[in-house]
Length: 107
Length: 285
Length: 151
Image (cartoon, rainbow over all chains, first blue to last red; front, top):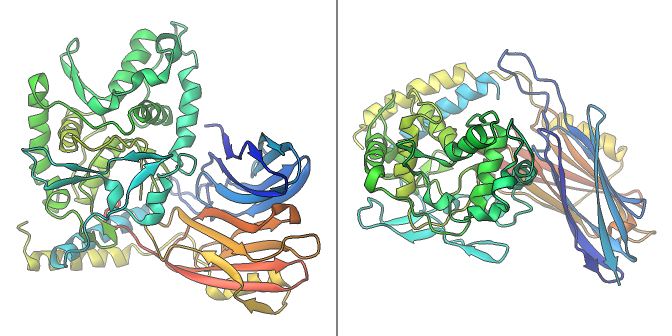
């Protein structure tokens, strides 16, 4: 099943406010430690990087390892001084890139 | 999961069962309140008059705080990934008839209340039906699409999405009329000892709920939150999948998903939870 | 229930033997020493200040598949003084490197939350790299239970 990101960001904030955001993407996070029915190791396939930017400036990122649970959930904060767009990007081991955007009105 | 670990958890399960039989009783259900997005969900209900249970408790009440909190926010609840996907699926045209779910059911909220009454009698077919049956009947008869497998991700997502529409409503499954014989069959299965460990559902979930089975806090085995996102599974699973797991633990040969036996057991168990709120999609350990 | 005490004991002894026999995993888990090396690599051998970093983990995880953890480091988070990154290690996992959070002054607070897998009872270690080149360290033990009823 295709990976589908979900993010929760407040729609409005005041200038200089620190807002909290939650992100989650559907992904098996195959650790590379499990064996399949044939007894062979199932190759690793995980989301290995996550990046969050605001108006094209990266403000938070994570280097993700195979110990992160299926459907990786990452919650973090940002300080917003102006209205703009958040962009979230997830990178898969296979090179796929998943992204989504959210707008916020600040003022 | 690799086979060694599977064997390991099964054997640990057996140790656990024996330990708990010798061991002492632990705490009962806790007193936490389940509130999702400001809406209170009843996790405790008066037992029906003919019930063997003193009080009904949702499985949520037996879970650790960390697991409980995952169900208290629809964003944090990982089941909602599947619910989101099911929303897209609902509008997707499939099959020879060129229809989507939405062509007949303009809004998924039309299904409010359905989950709370299932399984129920299907007069036309002369058989009981579960939500999985209803969905597949739509797919094969009206959409002319392929039926989904019981545990297919699409089926789990759709049963979660449709079940969610009834969240907070009291379970009200019928045990009389044409459902009586189904219910009776389910009740017989519930109390029949099976497997190498010679245990019935009641051995754990009626006689010993609230106790620790090694590290696991035994619940009443209520099914009001299915399909549930289980941490162990890392995904959604059906009621019948859970039945299979239980049967394997007591070293019995499990029935098949969708079998008459499991439909009957689902019926009986659903009525044991009449009065509890639908929690679909719940989160369990 | 009519399973006698003797019967129960026999059962558990039998299954215990079976349990021992099946205790070989496909991959070796890391040791605390491996993790110490990784921490040293992350800090470049710099001195680690114990504390001043909050790591929240459950005392007992109901299932090792999904263990919620959060970390917060007290910092003004301005251009001159902020938390650059926080690395999380699990010293009993096959691969102890769990996740590294990279912050900037625009993060507002150096705080993040995620869900991790823990193969067994072990220590979760958090190391914060501050913008002035100093490091903070903390660790919590998380007990991972293997559920009685796998299912």
